[in-house]
Image (cartoon, rainbow, N blue to C red; front, side, top):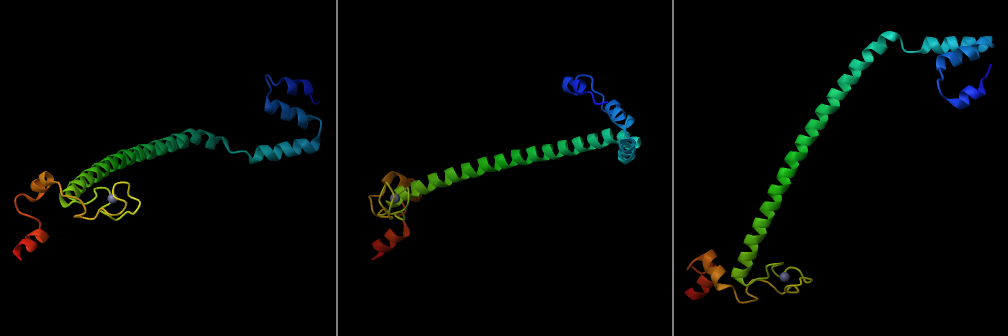
Length: 149
Ligand SMILES: [Zn+2]
């Protein structure tokens, strides 16, 4: 009844035929086979399965599209933030030069390679050209106040 050679060969194995072969010589096995057959999904559901698969594929595809759209948007926002940060940093650096401060840390970082934390405004000679560009002919308030006395 049990064909080991057929199992080992593997080619052309028909599960249904094998189960019938098992059941043929054993009534208990036959009853078990019947129970297993009864528990199987009704054929009508097999017809619905492709539709469900299509629905699932459509839903996953829509979610993928939405995720890609979000990713594109996030990438655009990240670029804008990067550009804004770069522009702000450049502006701050020019202001530091105009005030004679360390453009890297403004004297707030003792480990700063540029000033070792001593680069507060006025610690170095201000860049006159940048100063003129930023403040024009009018000196900054503190200097104006000093000249008033
Ligand atoms: Zn510094």
